[in-house]
Image (cartoon, rainbow, N blue to C red; front, top):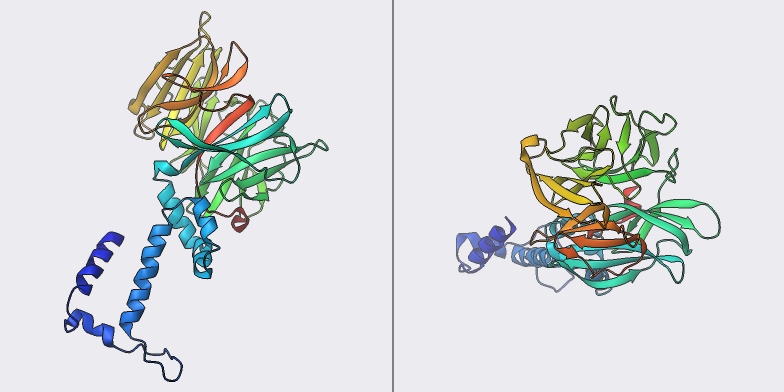
Length: 406
């Protein structure tokens, strides 16, 4: 639509000044006064200024965050533009649909220094580029940290401070390095629980969901949800039929089609969905052929906006890793197998990102070395530095300021 408007504008400007469509440019601008002796301002000048700003906005919305942060120092108008909520949302909508703006956020423990570090890198053409270390969003060196999930360029991170046993939850933008401390949940996040975050268009608010690993068999721990504008956590009703949630500490809650997803168990395994707006539960069957033995890890992730199911069984000394995606949301018949890997050293794998050529990046524990590693269906992925306690999430660059969300 914007390109059509600009083409129309160019067509009009090529017409002669006597053309009816251009006569309005010579009309004086009512209600606008200039200093004594200066000529009147006409509609033609106002139109040119508008389209210059419109074109500039369109150009700047396609630039990386780091460049835009530098441009804020160029002129007051540019700073006002970059800080404008409309521009920030326009920039986000563009970056979410452009593979060049996809980043990977990972953290690791340095064995030599016994400290955690956080890094980010660009994802393009099945490789990583521009790996850089990030400053921690807290003022102290953390004794431990954990990234729970990423959404619209924002990351939820837990930081355990080195001077005592306390910890804080932060909402952090790695691109702008802005952060806020989130309210403390009623039930601690130290145990096995997973978090997910998504935007609720009905309430125009971001929501964070926390689900414990164990469900109805553990009555002293409940799921909680935080709507950022409310500023406080509240308990949510449990799924009536779930005995336990199939969640591990490295998992995150996948949000697709306005609902959070994870694996639950009652009489059998299935995908639990929780609508973010109405907080209503639903169920999605797992794909046929998925191994459902007791010695199998099962999980749900998100790949290119689709529900992704995966399993890792322990069979006769082997660890087959299988992965499916659901082409049509909610339809069991639309599950499609992407690949299957038989590798005795792959344990607890989790898909992280799908490159443009179809290559899937996944995190796993190397069963032989008992270290964290990354791989693809084509073999080990050695471009990310090795390290202990290493996990990561794909995220999109954004200008969203966490402080403006609460």
